[in-house]
Image (tube, rainbow, N blue to C red; front, top):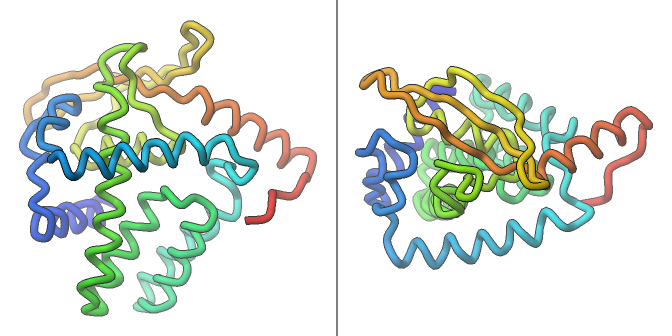
Length: 219
């Protein structure tokens, strides 16, 4: 996973002048987001809020998990066109899947399809920006809002933060992940909050669905 994240960081730096990586603190990076990108991120944030209210919202489904495994297999086998198709299948299950967009961007780079690669990268940036702009992660009130557990992992990977501890916490009728992370280079520690209320409820409902063998809604 580290190599794919590094590859995407390279793409972002080269093609979008995404200079956000300079700061080692997660909550210091919003200042690097341009006004144009802020508008895109705000629109995506509204889309995400609507998406989690639909019957199609099922975080971390078995189908999505299988598709992600399949994408990795195709990459290893050099089946790049097929990789794009499976990444699209992931995006049908979750149109905000950062892993799928990362794989699409990398695949299009290998296929020398510049426009398609830039489109996938731009979408990735918009989604990532929308998470960064949802809060600053320093308290319950200003927690980052995520709609998939993988988004939490991608943020820590992207900013090269190592997880020291994670707690599931309830606060004022909402559910949070409270993390302690460390920057391995500077040894600085940070407390980071992720608001997962809707995600946690949907995940519990999805676990019930799996137990009862209830089929997923059609996408």
